[in-house]
Image (cartoon, rainbow, N blue to C red; front, side, top):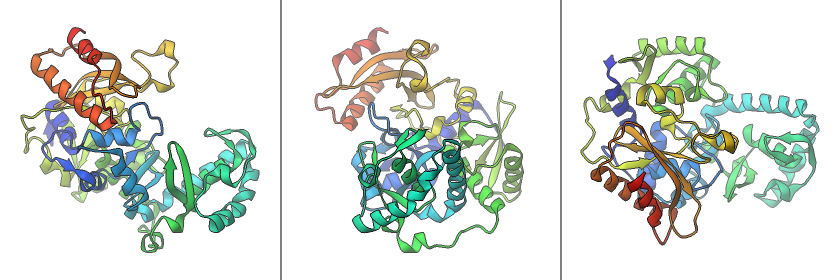
Length: 400
């Protein structure tokens, strides 16, 4: 199958429900999106919303963070777990991640050993007994003890071991208090029929095949170049992935795609191809969307550069003096093109921004400013800014 870059962009935007052709509403829409893409990356950093909420606000009409909280910690339709990295995925997928939990456990035990903190594993029995007796707790409520070295940001050995128990599936996140996880025994979080379900795979290859197929859907289409699209424990190496691509293609489950002007071959799930914008053009309503820094659409930054002509780096880990743009910068999507990026600013009452950067070839029109204005107003509502958008935002848009 051969398509142009324009068609490739439209396919990806449509697959990600960013084009308004297949609108999503309320919590049912959140679940529908998770069912399609498998997972959304979680990051606790909250400048103008956490990453998962930013992903969902760009897709779910009138989205509120409370929707995700209820699906995670009241209705238990979704669960915190390790996928691409720390992520959120449908609770029904729990059994499918058996191999990931095994690999995570092996890797973390090695990290504990190398950091001279393996003695923390001796605390496991005490931790599980305390949770059994007292119910959900934060690590600091169970005990305190310094690690030899800081492990993944954990200075408390109990926190590090609770994290280990989380990754091997012995405990789960009962709820979050801001960025702090409250853990409970996994049997108090996962329903028995899911927790005790048999492992769906007899071989590691079957798991790899499922994982590759699922990961393609997380983005829409992917190539076999190593990069952000293939991050995650359990993702097979490039050579093994290629064999899986060929197998899935022969079975008709995946379609190989050639994109005009790009030498690398792409792969998309065959079931998703009919929804490509070639058959379903983008509607005239080209709402502006503000995209999360770790959004599924831009997991593979190299692919985004080649297909969309948009170069994006999340600069939160780059020293201020070396940043090209800013600390926490959001891409701006209009239709199937990235037209700008901006750095929002924390404010208790208004939506404010530090700066706005247009892409070089964008023609700024009154129509475009109107779409951006509407997007800013929706974003302010999502953030709960009672006084709306600060007037300085529109001044920056008008005169930049």
